[in-house]
Amino acid sequence: MGSLSVEEEVSGAAQEAPDEALSKERALRGWLRELGSVLVAYSGGVDSAYVAHVATEELGDRALCVTGLSPSLAASQREELFALARARGFRHETLDTGELDDPRYLRNASDRCYFCKSELYAKLGPLAAARGLAAVVDGSTTDDLGDYRPGRSAAAERGVRSPLVEVGMSKREVRLLSRGAGLPTWDKPASPCLSSRIAYGTPVTIERLRTVDTGEEVMRGLGFREFRVRHHGDSARVEIAPVELPRAAADAVRIARAVRRAGFDRVLLDVEGYRRGALNEALPLVQLERAS
Image 1 (tube, rainbow, N blue to C red):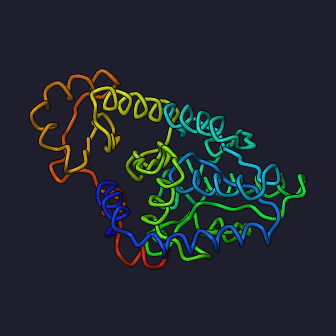
Image 2: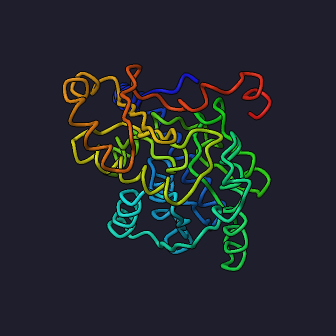
């Protein structure tokens, strides 16, 4: 898929031309002022946090940041996004999403994200209308345009706008500008929902989500920063960023014992290391092209 690791993104952000990035930020601020009001789909990740920050600075209370809560949101992610909203004075609300009530989501085919985002945006749209807000916006960047993102189809169907895409902003530029703004998310690893750790075709259940969440808390407690605990039935496949792999290999026995206690029978260390979209590697190329 060609996705960069957070290490590469952060390194690239440090070398990015600040004038060009700042020009795009000025365009973003003008875009928001012209719109007048927005509802930000705020997940607490790098991109949505940056959009929430700029929207709050430009629009004040006319920017409403809303987080969808469900068992697929990691506990650590939930704590971090609440803390950032408080620290930055976001007008922040939550709502419960019911994707786990949808059998199409639970079957966990490669289009799972479509049903999750459809559920979220089906609730955000009416909420924005009820509050008199001009549009629902997300944190998609230009990097998302070339990847397999079924959730973008759901956004398009619901009229969700992507201001970072509209001003031509990349992930690296978001990191650069977030660092300049003092946002703690500027070098945060990507943080998709917990369901993305469950192999396609293995049904999503609350128990599996809880097992993955516990396993990743264990890895975080061991001091690792960028990783995934992939759920493969009774086995966990642990992917760790290449820069952290040597330490992981040296400490493999301790990792295996700790992650097994999360609820797995076996723990496998992926020697290729962490890479985004690893589950998509098994999908036929023609399927990805058709869905994108």
